[in-house]
Image 1 (cartoon, rainbow, N blue to C red):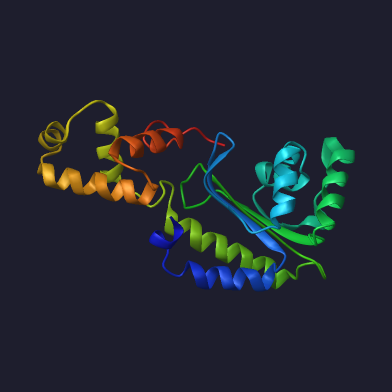
Image 2: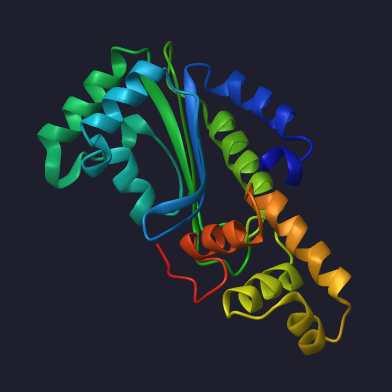
Length: 218
């Protein structure tokens, strides 16, 4: 998805790997605890353990990102109410080279109610202030490009809403004052952006992500 919306994503990822060579996690447009887009380059064995043991429930980094806006180093995050569990998770992560790290938490594009988070790690040292600033800039660039609705335009979202309401292509075209071919084109682009098999699947994905109805907040 990001490659379609942000052609320079590979350059941004190269910059990110320089700052956090041990891996990173990117979550965009989080609604109801579920991100619209998620990517992790952490070691696969660690990701498996983290998922199977549901570490996300007690991860102090995740807790900080949920309730804070800004940037901080992992070492500066309090372990909170679940101190023992939080310390265990951080200690376990260090076994995979995730010794030091930083996290950026943002509400995304101006006016957005979605949460965007970028967190990354390195093995050798704490992140410098300049590196945290760079992580913030990278997240802002990606979030601004994606927007609050996965890079879909308002007319594309409108077409998905109309289709979800049970209207046919011709009925949508009559209602919106455009040709059926235009509606078909809008739905086709929405399908491509969402990675859907067809228009119905696109509606299902958009509905699940909270894109075409009232947006729940994180």
